[in-house]
Amino acid sequence: MAAEKADILAQRNTRLGLVHQLIFGGVLLVVPALTVLTAFGIAPGTAVDDLHQAPVAQALDLPVPGATPAVPGRYVTQERVLRGDTVAALFERLGIHDARALDFLRTDATGRTIFRQLVPGRMLQAETGEQGELLALRYFLGSASLLEVMRSAEGFTARNRAVAEAPRVYYKTATIRSSLFAATDGAGIPDAIAMQIARVFSTDIDFHTDLRKGDRVSVVYEMIYDSGELVAPGRILCAEFVNDGHAYQAVLFTDDEGKDTYYSMDGSNRAKAFLRSPVEFSRISSGFGGRIHPIFNNWRAHTGVDFAAPRGTRVMASADGTVMSAGVRGGYGNAIEIRHGGAITTLYGHLTGFAQGIKAGARVRQGDVIGYVGSTGYATGPHLHYEFKISGMHQDPLKVALPKAEPVPAQLRPRFEQVAAAARSTLGRVSTAAAERFE
Ligand SMILES: [Zn+2]
Image (tube, rainbow, N blue to C red):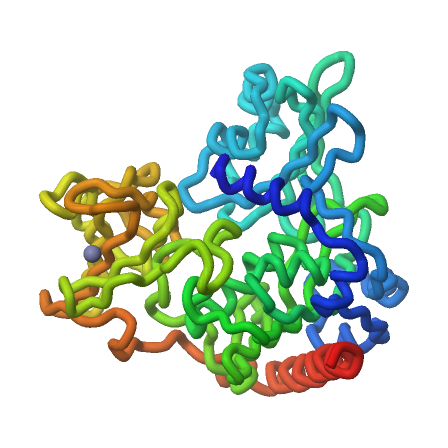
């Protein structure tokens, strides 16, 4: 994680100027707010009037939190809660080194709710001083409310409050020339949104290997502002990824219970039962034909697929399941085996270590971090050895036909059709505007 952050900072410092931004295809569109409302429906609790009035165009570079400290000696970082996370682990990733702050959160009636409600996917933002002392902590309970911890002369205080503004909506497009992150940087798309792009399309596109020069992404996403300040990236509302000439589209649809799911425009679920690659795509693995050659050995050679990745890269469960074993296993080194439905098992070898809580009997969900890439056992360099078996028979995980997740429920179909049609037309306008301007 530390290495990844250093890499992010290093790349940010070489951030390109406006001229490059135009070359990379950052695009600006002014779309009436009403279109947005029709397109995506209104999340419960969204202030409609605010949305109407909210400026949806942003010509300037986004003030991405964490890129540069706004005040000297004051550092702003943000992290998403992972499955199995602890407050201590989050403090570590946020760069908070403050035992008193942790004590306060444990004992304060309002503050302690953070320990009880660490929901994966939620965002935390921290402001810290030179020594890692906590100055402010904001835990976003949704896009509408947050828990805020502030340091004052008297000590810490915690309170729950509403996010002051409705999310603002951005329309961007970027053309891949060297890597996903170079393109999104050039277009002013924040890292957190770039990661969501990789996640939303990960069941169709392996971002380690499938990217091609000239691929294009168009994305409509929210950013959450509070009292005029950007506090957190929001959700992708719809997106299109043109990979190697094939266009994939995704639209966010919220069901009657408020659950968010990404669907293709025809209503099929974006999610698949198994991930295309169980190695997390990150800034350090961004690119094609470059530093990293993710697959250097096909499965026939040794009944598995090898994914080369830097030591410490997060390894994810490729599907929901139960851990059968996690420990040293001969030539596999540190290995994890997971049992899924349909007599399918997956195995992850040569790991440098296991994620917290990963042991025999543990339940895991697709995308959960289970371990870290290493070179334990018979391995010449850091890589993930991945095996996929059906009833004990090895299968090529890159070729085997896999079941799909549930499509849009029939009773929600009429509303979905409206959302999808509006998203399709919005994406059409975003990419057409980009094409006219840059081609
Ligand atoms: Zn292997």
